[in-house]
Amino acid sequence: MTMVSRRAVAAGLLLLPGVASAAPRYDAVLKRPDDPRRFSAPTYDKLSAAVAAAPANGTRPFRILVTKGAFDEQVVIDKPFVHLVGESRTGSIITHLAASGLTAPDGKRWGTFRTPTLFVRAPDFAACNLTIRNAFDGLAEMSKPGGLHSHDGGGPQAVALMLDKGSDRSRLTQVDILSYQDTLFPDAGRSLFERCLIAGSYDFIFGAGRAFFRGCEIRSLPRPVDPVDGYVVAPSTPIDQPFGFVFKDCRLTRASGTASRSVYLGRPWRPSSQFPDGRYGDPRFVAQAAFIDCWMDDHVAPEGWTQMWYTGKDGNPRTMLQPEDVRFSQYGSKGPGAAAFQRGRALSTAEARAMSVDAVLAGWRA
Image (cartoon, rainbow, N blue to C red):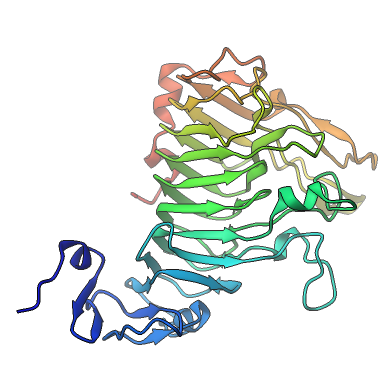
């Protein structure tokens, strides 16, 4: 009689003699070529191939089991209802190495917007119990002679996950999202992050999307080389969008070596648009972010929020957008880094309660 562990059943694997059978709830399995296990569901050694097998207009979850291993590929999720389920949160790794200032295969610089390991361009994406990583080592790069630096136009920006145009109702649960700079780019649609780890050092959660972070760890990494402080968020929220990034019951932690009082909660990103009279910072982008009932370690700067430059209508590329001119706020902060922050608004209890998950993700009951 074959004994089946509860863990195997919970993971969706029924381990039988000579066969690792994916339970019916999995439509595809991603595994390395050297993994000897056999599965009842179709297997692929490239995530892109597994995604290609999903229906173009699916209306139910197409579940892909991501087995243990590092799968090195830049992938576009362009089918609806693609759900990635990891066999191991730290051992099932979707990874790729690309950075803004490095040369891409086409001979051009990658540029920030081409660096993501995973692009999501379709609705109802989900991921749980795995890691999404950009493998570029930003700290090592900045530490070497002639290395790329954050203040360069094409520097160490290296996105792990981008929620791009076409994405909506994305849900990530217990996912590690790892890079060093510009880690997570929720630029479109609504998204929910629950019990995730998001690590980086500089504008590492940025974009124009609407995202709710619940019970996540937001980990700042050290910056011993570059003479700039760290920034957690850099939202570019459209002015007609009531919410950008809202963090509820999250923990703002720091990796060893991250200096005390060196990391701002955020700064406002105002991208440029083309107008009849020139190209300059678009006043329709007025950042919104809030931290509600979050624990903060002592790496958080006492100012809380800070300014960010954009190209003014007069062509000045160092026009400054101040935190008081956007929608930055906090409520109920606790921990060594909590303070009556010098910049940004302190919400009332009623205002904080109004920033619920249902309000932020209006129209989608997550």
